[in-house]
Image 1 (cartoon, rainbow, N blue to C red):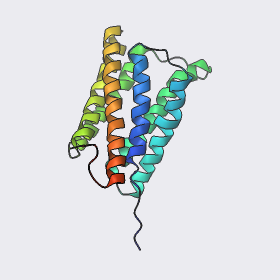
Image 2 (tube, rainbow, N blue to C red):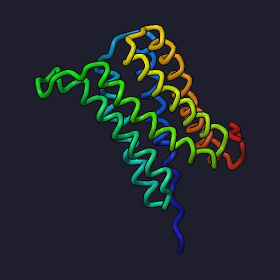
Image 3 (tube, rainbow, N blue to C red):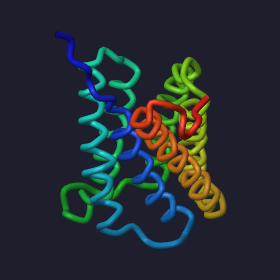
Image 4 (cartoon, rainbow, N blue to C red):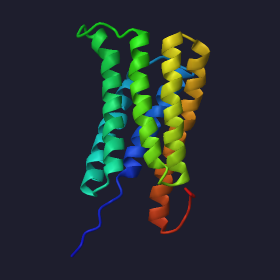
Amino acid sequence: MESKLANPAPLGLMGFGMTTVLLNIHNAGFFPISAMILAMGVFFGGMAQIIAGIMEFKKGNTFGTTAFTSYGLFWLTLVALIIMPKLGFAEATPDAYMGWYLVMWGIFTLFMFLGALKGNKVIRFVFFSLTLLFFLLAVRDFTGNEAIGVLAGWEGIVCGASAIYLAMAEVLNEQYDRVVLPIG
């Protein structure tokens, strides 16, 4: 008897999407970094995506495994970069160094976007907008230009919202066994 495995992508997409929206509401200038964003980064953005990545591995999905596990670890490293200096474990990372961190994530995401071109329209948009987000944030950190940071924040809200939409489309479309929310 063959058992059907659940689709872990909505879990990973929600962890990514909700955490991305919250961090980018901060980047857009609405509120400072707080325990709420850090907790979301560790538990939902970080751990939930790692769990989804492991579940994608079980399904034999290399793209899903790489994406969810990597971005889960992105959230954990980002939180560590913020809290380690506050705890006295390391010096704070200068903005220009953070720019390089974001460039590396942008390059990784650009390659993931190329892989996403084989997917539906919404997943392509998620990866395209995430690539753009990482590079905008890197430019902000290299230049200190607050306007670019605010633009990145708004773009990041759109990126995160698109991941939330895709997650809920996958859940509802499967639950109702028909297209409730189109993903193209």
